[in-house]
Amino acid sequence: MELSRAMTDKRAIDRRSLSWRTFVFGFARSRRLNLRRVEDAEVLFLDWHHPWLFFLAVGTMVMSCVDAFMTLQLLQYGMVEANPIMAAILDQSTMAFAASKITMTGTSILILVFLAKTRFLNRVRVGLFLTVIFSSYACLICYEFVSLMGVL
Image (cartoon, rainbow, N blue to C red; front, side):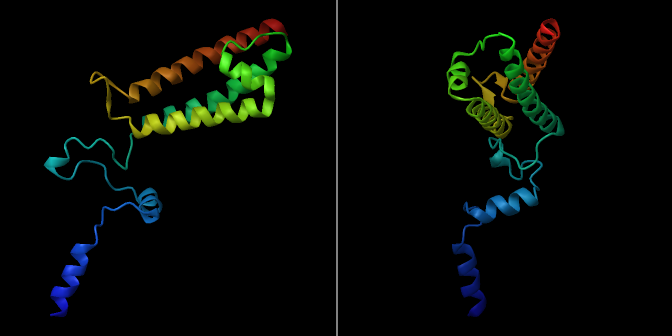
């Protein structure tokens, strides 16, 4: 009698429900490296991501911070911010510029890493966008470095 009631209580609790425990323990003990069931073939969100995504995400964040610093340096020498949105934020204050740049870049990277295995327009993997953004930032940093050397 007690065993059947315990089994009923256990079945009533859905282990897959979302709670704060899900995020805390899921982050600390990521175990889902592959799909578990055949019917989960469409599930694209795993707990473990390839180390290359980590490299791209951290590298892009670092280059975004370097870009913000170099942009502020170049603005002191008479250069103009090309992005109209960031130029408007820059008119408010440099602190707002740096905070919004880091916030927008970080949020975008989190979304792209989360969706890395999905396909954009059923053609291109979203993880490829991280590689393109990383490469674009590398080119931008080189351009800013050369510009800064030309000004000095």
